[in-house]
Image (cartoon, rainbow, N blue to C red; front, side, top):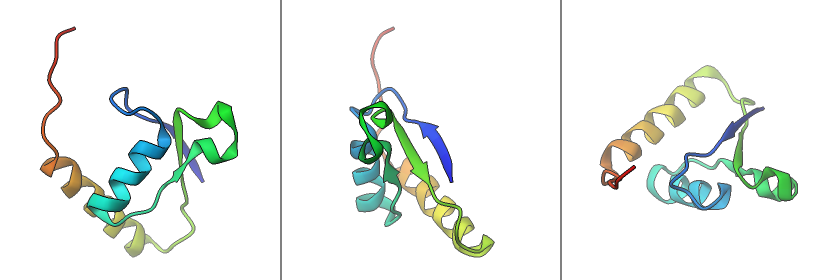
Length: 74
């Protein structure tokens, strides 16, 4: 498994997980299911063969490219 911090624009790992499931048809586990310290993370399983993982990465990349750009001031 790989744990990754979610990007700042997401409320929590559930929001990112829901978006990826809806837009990329890829399920990534929100870290919050493992307790409150996991809320800002997702957990990615690497328990599939390389071709399946490549397909998942491709779907996520396509979903990210289709998403509207986040704008704002810093």
